[in-house]
Structures are given as structure tokens and as C-alpha cells.
Amino acid sequence: MPKMRMTDRGVVALKSTAGRQVDYFDNRFPGFGLRVSPLGRKSWFVMYRFRRRPRRLTFGPYPHLSLADAKARAAAVMREVMQGVDPAAVKAEERRAETFAELAAGFGVGLATAWRYVRVRCVHCGGTDKISSRQIAGTSYLRAECCESCQGYSKVFYAEKAKPLEPLADDLASLGLDMMVGEEGFARAPNPFVLGVMGQPEG
Image (cartoon, rainbow, N blue to C red; front, side, top):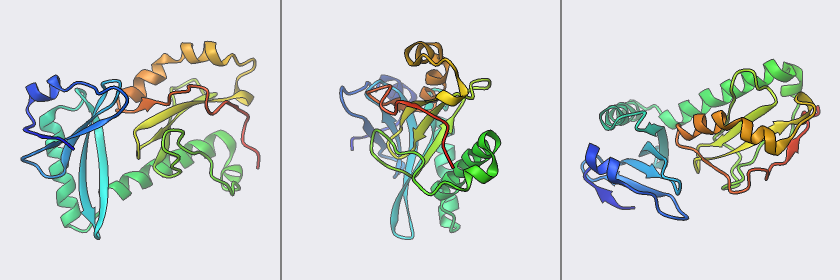
């Protein structure tokens, strides 16, 4: 975990490391840092302890979020922690609420609440929590499942909502979705079709 004096020039100069992501910490602001993915994407984060447990909260991508703005957000997070609030838990709950609302609208509330198995699993790290979806308006057959634990994502195609479905062609035609999640600091799974082409979930 390299430490550095965070400056605008220093952040711009940070390069990617082949095969792994690297977290750079600010040596003047404990817990505040920048993650650089193997593809060179940069995203701000802050690490803290809540009830003796280590926690991590990701803010957003650089340069969309400047160094000054990221530091201000990190300071606000620390204030919330001192007030007894866990910002990472609040963010995760908001993500789950958004995902449930989308599922309820797309498949019906009854179906969404009837599932008794893990709906998604991160193909990067295998995690099942801190996963949320992204979607571009007008593409109900396609979502990006994003994992906040490892900052990875995968595209999922729903065959029932797109007939006929051509995975390779539809993947190339939906690069806008890749750009959108990439700007948030997520990196794509090595195998773009590791999840396959999914049918509509059954109750």
C-alpha cells in the first residue's frame, strides 16, 4: 500500500500496473486514497473503522471527481463516522433499494420477493453482497452487475427480453454501458460472457 503526497500533478502521473490494482494512500490524510485499476481507471476511496471493523467507501472516478472534491467527501465521511453513522452501510442499503425498485418494476413485486437463492455473484471475487446494477434507458435486456468490493463488473443479457439475441453483436453495440460504469471506476471481468446469456428469472 504505497503512500504519497496527494497533489493534482501526482494523481495525473499515476500509471496502471499490469495484472493488478494498486491503492495509493495520502500520507497527510489517513485512510484517504486512490485506486488505480490494471486498465488505468482511477477511483477515490476512504477507509475507516466502524465498531472496530475496517470499512471502505468508494466515492467516484477521477478526473470526474477532483482531488479537492474527493478530500471534502472523505472529510464528510469521517464526520459521519464520529457521529455513529456507517457511510458504507448507508450506501449499500441505498443500492439495494434501487436494485429492488428496478426488479419490482421489471418483473413484478411478487416475483422479486419470491427468490430464495443468491441472485448474482461477482465473477471477479465471488462476493454476493455490495453488488448493484447499472442500465442504460431503453435497454431492458441488458444490465451491468457491479461489485463494490473489488470494483469489477460483468454484463448480463436477458434472453427473454431480446429476441433474437446476438451476444457478441449486442456486446459491441452496448459500449456506452461499459463507458458509463468505467467512469465510476469499475473494471470488466476477463471473460465478457462468463455469466452466459440469462433467461428471465423464474419464481
